[in-house]
Length: 210
Image (cartoon, rainbow, N blue to C red; front, top):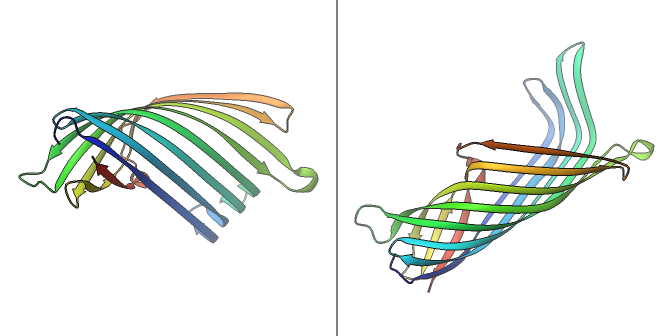
């Protein structure tokens, strides 16, 4: 990757699940559905050979719906959840440093590693129960993450490449402010370090080099 190269592109990830009377270990009568969708356009400039800096902007939306869910350990110990629904959307701004690594003598295939600093802001709504037992929780979410994103790129020609990448979240901070039924309030702050590869975060992308 020569010095002075501009690149732009985007990645997309999507996951969906449907449960119909699903049973597994202690779980019984699980009925519901969920999906997760994320799209990320980005740009980059190589300030030296095989090294570039850039920015990413992401939108993520998740939806979960549980009609029924039962955990039964024995005849006296069980937990039941019904009529639960949540939806959330997050916006992320990310600065990243990318390093390219050649695979042998190939000029078509290569590896890359993005080191990222990301800030996210979003909102979510959680609804449970029906009728007089209906409850609603509204959340405001702030996130800060430092992570590593390894990937593989395959050049179709000198200007277009296909990419596959996976997230490895390193350090994360998350704050959630809640409002329950527009009356009670609460908050939750979490932080942690985890360099485990998340295989469910695989993203496919297309990059254009100018």
